[in-house]
Image (cartoon, rainbow, N blue to C red):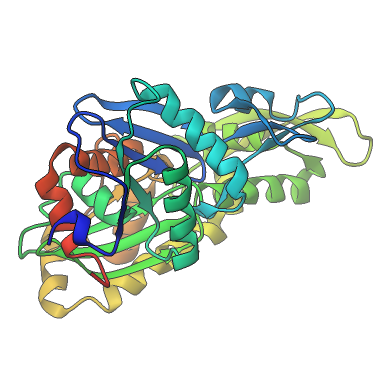
Length: 351
């Protein structure tokens, strides 16, 4: 089956080597791989827009620095929620901005591979395809993030032996067992790094009557966050607004406190992984006892995930090299090698 004949592909033109892109438009970050060049862009999925005209004012890192500090009339927006497009107009402007930054010229119309969560609906999938086409793509191929993550993590997905990947992103957690190049079983839950940060905001408000901003919560997770006891527990100081007085106040947080705050999110994530293992065929389950589970995504960098899952599931668990880039590396392998893309599309559900 050729990509042009595949129903998952919406095409406008022919293959043009050297101009093609892989885009992981994630809830938290957007990463772009250019064929033959590797990952050339890794920016927050944040846009600053004019509140009156809707025109893009800033994007990525520039927009994130403006968050909470914008002048009147300018809004900072995260156009994706739970891994899917929530604001189509802003998402398209943001995607166009990023694509224009990495392609050599406006006359170049690249083929684009776009990554989506496993549980994406047809409408949500079409929204991403349409956005990419309107940004100048000549053809759009949609590939599940778990497949890209497995390829990017170097798993032997073409083998008869099972591989299992857990991709923890900003808005979704995708879990899949793969064998013979296809997905045997998969689950997707709309929980991820955003929910971890929200749990910290909620916990600090309930414990200290202190309101934290999004960036402060993210800093707390980065500095002291964990899902498993640490050999040496950590502490950090964080500043927020006292809800009683309205004045700034600083408190000290420890990793043990933060772990308790995020425990509900941790339990939900573990349960999604357990559900996939529970319905795994016995022959493949035996493979996973030896091969174990590989963690990808930015959420995998939260301290203790390997230890927590190893304890809960009784199988080996490891974090992939550079887990934040595993998905876009796998998608990049699809644009770098047409044979890989053909195999992935040929085994995609519904093809």
